[in-house]
Amino acid sequence: MTTALAFVFGMLFGLGLIVSGMSDPAKIIGFLDLAGPWDPSLMLVMVGAIAIGLVGFTLAKRRDRSLLGLPMQLPTSNQLDRRLVIGSLLFGLGWGLAGICPGPALVLLGAGSAKGVVFTLAMLAGMALFEYQHHLRQIITHTTDA
Image (cartoon, rainbow, N blue to C red; front, side, top):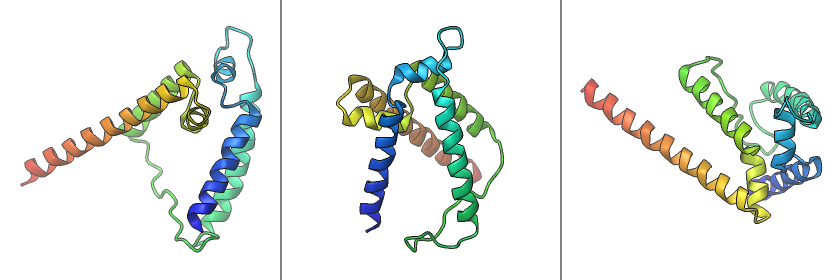
């Protein structure tokens, strides 16, 4: 049941990206390019998403379990550390250069777009590289602690 609902809500999210035009890299670049013909539509989508997220997180904080009966797993840390800042900068840089972020990348991948394939492969490679360096860092930390 949980997997089926995740699929349905994922498809709904993807459909929302398509209908709003947010899966089109040119639309994103149009928002980020302040020197060219600026397209403010992404800002409206972001404001709507923030409002819905604010309501959702406010309600979720009051619950121990989700509507499906699963335990709530909300972030507990509010620390800004080096990893978060660097990761955010890399995400923003990639988003600004490509006009694609992970959600729309999967929509583009599903549509058979070459840009979606390249972006998704690059994203997976970046995730694998992070996991590899994180694993190495743990090995080095455990070796020096022993």
